[in-house]
Image (tube, helix red, strand yellow):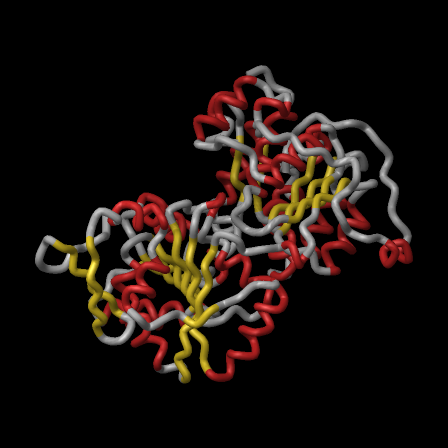
Length: 428
């Protein structure tokens, strides 16, 4: 939610039968703006963008930012890791009616508050009473603040629904509708999502007025830059030994291991620690403060391997993550792109490894067909496996060496660098 300037307009709802006639493709009036400098952004915002480390806008940013700034309702779809969240952050900051979001808005003196469940309600009330330019939150807590009249909606000019498909998957549909009912009729609505199931398109019909569509067709929703493998493990109980064999490879960079249930995360974390492996873990049942502490350690690099449920698959950006392991294949196809999109962020190279039981082969092939991608069996030859798993920048760093490869315990790899003797640890 953001307090921003917008263009007054009247809301028009499409009739239900119109929905079947709409072809959801990128709108013709969408043009491409190749640089941040040519977007007409305020100087203090540009300073924040470049200071944060952005150099060139991604494809979705080149198309969506100017449309949002114009005050248009926008439906934006792009794969994970392509800068969707930064798209609306930049747009909101440009539209704020102030003279001079955290991080990107460091140079603009922006008041921004995170309003999420599991945190202190009193602190939310105090911050909202003080006044905020931008409120980012989960639907349940935001609606609670509206009901308490701590969040006064008459001043809200823009509603942004980020990761809209996941909010619906989590059962937030009614709460999103509740929030929307309290907003002024002329509120600008922007919806950002990696996938666009029918339920979301139905919601855009109710919430939006003549929206600009910036979409990536499913057959264009590529996973370019992410090398995908599967490891055939035959039975569930073989997964743990396979993961232990791969552990040395995981610690070369930062890695995330996904499980389908909270119980599995707890079980796997305990098993790994019993085997003297260092891991951290996170899932939705943990208190918010504990999750924040774990994420802080992971972002800083203090912990290198994180075991998690799909709570980590959306919207959490740790650029140095370049390896994802699906200990369990996800329960639906849409989740797959969110999980492995945590690697290969912003055009960087990434690797995804899927543990596949005999009865998972059908699910794997379904994912391949759905995303028009290819998932190869991970080669068991030590050199090939390791070189494919290494991010390119690490490969570049060792090109000066002549490498001999020893295969130890199946998938575990050890490298002997000449003219040196002994094994070399490539970890930072």
